Image (cartoon, rainbow, N blue to C red; front, side):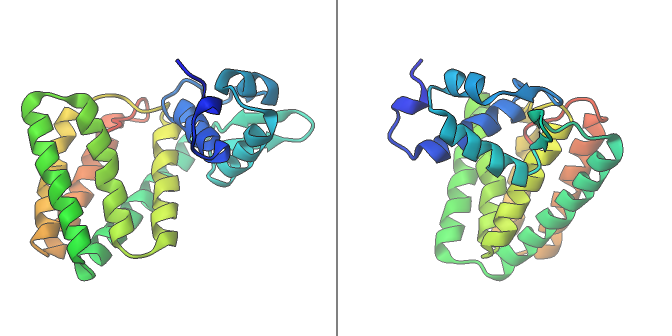
Length: 218
């Protein structure tokens, strides 16, 4: 496997994305200390982009700096988890409402593609593809609202909600039908139905998590 230092994208972007993935997938556990040198060795980059990644992920709430003790993966309590969940529901509903209200042809085309590709992946039992489409589903609704601030905040809150319960799981199939129903309501410009379905979807996912392990498909 090649290191990210051998790829053509910005090393800063690659390093942030890969370190975020390691945290969200649970490969770097809550409370784990992060050392610049060991992370740079693991990712195949210099210490500078790692230092920059630490700053970016601290702003996202995934790591925290400890005075004279370096950096560690954030470990928060049940109350914080509940607050993050409430924030996520509120932001997802705002995103759905604004996406429906400002629909463009490009956004319609993107959502129809996600719906079509998701149906094919579900029929084929392709969980890897469904996982990618689930991520794009939420990103598309956040970006479709037309606010970069909302899209970035929603992504950070969604990442935090996964992280606080120990990483992302691969149980994606059961979520696709719910995502498809939301997509159809959005494409039908039925904001009320789309928001109701999104709230139900997130409530179901949070109830199933039980504070122990997430459904990464949410």
